[in-house]
Image (cartoon, rainbow, N blue to C red; front, side):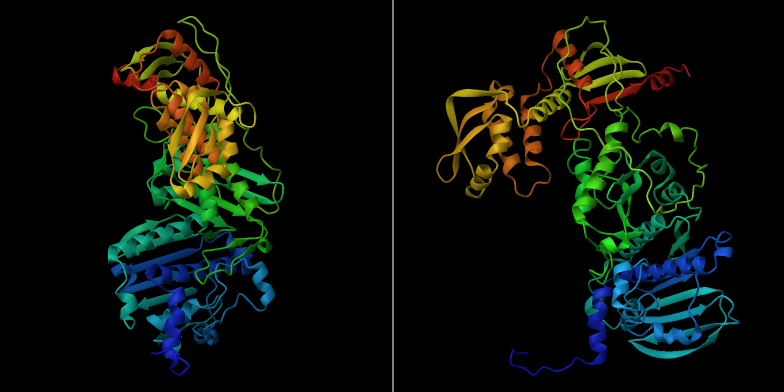
Amino acid sequence: MSASGRIEPLPRDVAEKVAAGEVIQRPADVVKELVENAIDAIVARRINEPEASSARTGNVIVDISGGGLESIRVVDDGGGIAPDQLAIALARHATSKLRTLDDLADVVTLGFRGEALPSIAAVAAIALVSRVPGGDAGAFVEAEDGAVLGSGARGSPIGTQVTVRRLFATVPARLAFQRSPGGEAAAIARLIGTYALAYPEIRFRLTSDRRIAIATDGSGDRRATLAAIHGADVALALLPFEALDPAGVRVSGVMSAPELTRGTRSEMYLYVNRRPIQNRALGHAIIEAYRGFTPDGRFPMVVVDIEVDPREIDVNVHPSKMEVRFRRDRLVYGAVQRAVRGTLVTTAPPPSISAPLRAPPAWLAAMAPGALTATPYEPRLPFPAALAGPSPLAASAPASPVGIAEPVAPTTTGTRLPVMRILGQAHGTYIVCEGPDGIYFVDQHAAHERVLYEQVLARRGGDADRQALLEPLVIDLPAERVPIVLERRSELLDLGFDIEPFGDCAAIIRSVPAAVASRPRLREAIVSAIEAVADPTAAGDPFDRAAASVACHAAVRAGDTLSFDLMRDLIGQLEGADLSAFCPHGRPTVVRLPASQLERDFGRR
C-alpha cells in the first residue's frame, strides 16, 4: 500500500493477532504466562487460607505435546476463578491484580497486565476449567480466534486447568518461524526450571510427550530443587552467599566454584523479589565478579535473589514482564558484584586432579546426594545486618630466599596456598610441591602472571616501574583507536607506557614497564596492552585488562628452566598473592593431587 493510502481501523481479529504477537511468540511464552497465573493463584490461596497453607504444598503441573505446538495443559490447585468471571478472564486487559495506576508502583504478583489469556485465545484454541474453594462444582469456558465458543458447569478439583491446542494454526507466518518440537520442549523445560528455583516450596512437574522431564518435591529446599533440575552433584557443589547493602538491597543465592563453568550464560538465574528477570547489566556484574577466576568464554552457574522495595523497580517495561528497571541501578549492580566476588575471594580453593566439581563445603560434608534436607526458602524483609564485603587487592611482597627443605610460610586467607615444600620442576613448566594434603603442581607462567598482575595493580596511581627506550618505537594503530588511546593515556602511564600520537594512524612509545623491557617480543607486548586499553567493546576496567596483558608478557614462559632459588622466590610471592589460585585470565595457577587420591590409587585405602 502506498503512503497516501486511506487510514482505516484494523479488523478486530487482525488487531488481536497483532497485539498477541507482543506477548505470545512461541510455545514457551504460553507456558510462561500460564505458569505465572498458576503461581499467583497458589500464593493468593495461601494468603486467603493461612490455616491450611502449612498443610498443603501447592502444585503446578505442565503437560505438553509436540513441543507445545500441538497442546499445552497447565493445572494448579490455587484459588481458582469464579464461574461468572471465567469469560471476563478472556477479555483483554481484564485482571484481578490492578485497580488504579498507582498500583503499578507496588506490584508484587508475577502477572498484572491482563493480556495473557486473550493473547493466547487470539492465536490458538483455549479451554479453561476452574473451581473455587467451597464451590459445589466447577465451570468452563472455551474460545478460539478470540471468540468464545461455549461455557457452562463442569466437575473439577479446586484450582484451574488451562488447555491450549493448535497454537499458531491460524497464523502461518508465525508458525513457520517456530523451532523444532525438541527445541521448543527444551525452552519450556528451562522455563519451568527457572520458576521452580524461584518457588521451591511449590511442587512442579513437566511432562513432555508423556515423558516426565522435571519433577520437584516442593519441600522448600532450593538445593533439592537444583538437584531435580541439574543433578545432585551440581546442587552440592554450589556455594551459598548472602550480603546486604546498607541502602536496603539484599543479595543472596548460590553460585558455582570457579572450576564449575558453562559454555553459555543460560544457567545464570536472576530474580528480583522472586520474579525471574533478564538484565544484561546484572549479568555483566556477575561475569565481572568472576573475572580472574574463570577463563574467558566460560560462564558460572549462579542463582541470584535480589530483594528490594517494590517501589524501587519498574516491572511494566515490556509485555513479557521479564525486563525491569531499577530506580538505583548502580546500587544493585554493585551489591550483586560485591556479594559474588566476596564469596569467591574467601572460598575458592585450588582445583583438584580428577575432581571436576568442587568438593562440598564443610557444612555439607555429611550430606549425601540422596539425603538433601529440607530448609524452606523464605524471602526476608526487613533485612538483617549487612555482611562484610570483599577485601581490596594488596601488593604481594617478594619472599626472601629460604633453604630448599624449608616450607613457604603459611597464611590464613582461604584462597592462598598452604605450607608447601618444593620438590622440583616437571616438563620445564610445572613446579612440583608437597603440601599437607597432597601434591601441588604450579604452572610457572600462570603463577608468575598472577604475581606480576597484583604488583601492577598495587602501583596504580603511583610511580610506575618504567624503563626508557634507547630508541623510541613507532606502533601502527587503526585510526579509530587513536582517540581512545589519547583519552586513556593516564592508564597507560600508570602501567609504565609513555605514549604519544604520531600522525593519524600511529603512536610513538618512549618508555615501557620495566618487567617487559627485556622480553624478546616487546613490540607484541606493547600492542597487546594498547589493544586492551583501547578496545571499546571489551568489558571491565581498561587498566585491569592492560595490567593482565603486561603481566602475561612479562611472566616466565612454559619451557623455561628455573633454578631452585627462582622457584622458591616464585612460590613465596605466589603465596602472598590475594587470589593465588588463578591467573588474571582465569586459568588455575595450582592443581592439587589429593593425598587420599594417591592412597586409593596405590591401594592403601
